[in-house]
Amino acid sequence: MLKTLRAKGLSSTELKEIALALMLLDHIHYFFAFTGAVPEWFSMLGRVSAPLFLFCTVEGFAHTRDRKTYLLRLWALGAGMGVIQFLIGLGIGQRADGFYPMNGILRDLTIACLLWQGIDWLRQRRFGRALALIGGVGVLWPAVSLALMSVLPPVGQLPVYFLSWTVLPSWTFSTDGGIAFILGGVLLYVLREHRRAQALVWAAWALFTDLGSVLWLLQDGWGLGRLLLTCYQWMEVFAAPLMLLYNGQRGAGHKKLFYWFYPVHVYVLYALSCAVMAFGG
Image 1 (cartoon, rainbow, N blue to C red):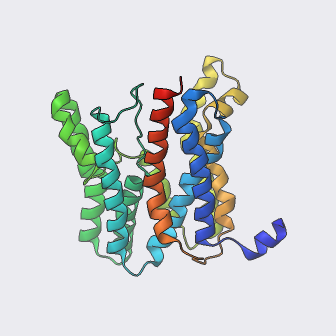
Image 2 (cartoon, one colour):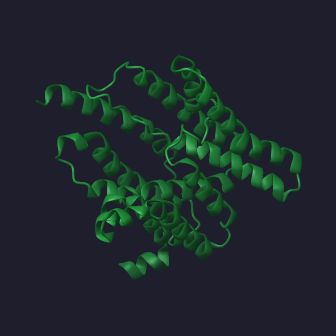
């Protein structure tokens, strides 16, 4: 079976289906960990999901005939989730323990797509547009938002949060994976014509950013085994073999499913978790 899989490969649709299933496991643990009934390995497996969606977004953005519509769809869904996130953060519909969903990968993907467009403009020697886009998205707005957050009182920070979670996503504090995840997407995009290098660089980047940032815990007496099983974000590295299996085909598509499943399942699981906490005893 493995030999057949290697020969046939996996289409973009099949990779997304794998990512979707792993994401669902991850989020079941995310929303119901408080019950003690959901095993930690659900989220361990789920570490592979976000890199696969990022990889498929690279391919989708590169091949789409209408980049504006592609980008606007990501942006609109991410902004809509940001509005809900902001309202719940204010206490509207918040779970009894104060927890509320911070899922923002669509904002990561929106920023990544803008940077990829800037990269393409650089390749086309349209330097003014490229630098304006990359500088505005990657440097200017993140710097401005951080500066505002540092000087404004808590009430004054609310508009900055709202803008960052909705119409002007910033890698500083409004995304899921932050700058490391987005820069990983830049690497995937730059290397998309070199599949082996792409997968290898992703694996190295995941280990460097996710595991390298917590190695200091070894100095505090943590064993390596405990470190690997507790700080398991590094397991994103296991997306690399699946990237290598990509056969360059789109597959069946199911475009609406992949766009709408993410926000719908997040808020369904969140509502269920609120009910379990309220009535589960």
